[in-house]
Length: 170
Image (cartoon, rainbow, N blue to C red; front, top):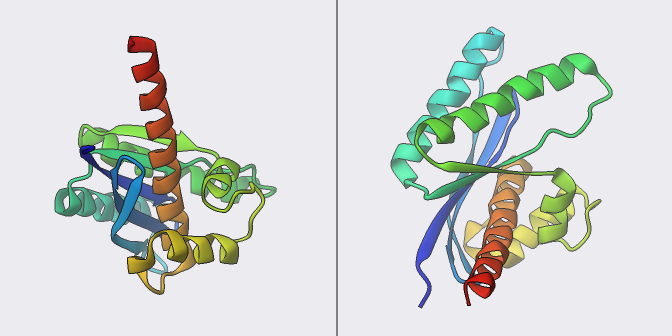
């Protein structure tokens, strides 16, 4: 029987940061929890970052994941939006790292391919597949689905890397 690894997936955003927690035992995935950290409308940029950090820190304490994964920022046409998203992503990397977790990063296309089977799937397709793969999640928002997809992507990659490590050791 495989040990259970708890993974926190994060889909960073300056207004809505999705998060999802799954348990992974070998190839078996189980839904634990998910949600969205929403920053206060009208808050100054630094305060929004504090809200994201505090929300993630509370989740880390509550769910006690063993590993974490964050979606990489895709190239954005608007430089200001890319900068703001990059700041939120920095906080999403910092919070689990400060808690002593390893933090993996995955491109959006890799995340979608891991869950849907193709890298250019839309949000509805990702949401639908998450409900198939993790039926106990119920109705979830797209930010939650994206975060759970990041966690699943990490579970797939971590399992693959472990298999390679075992093959090299034998």
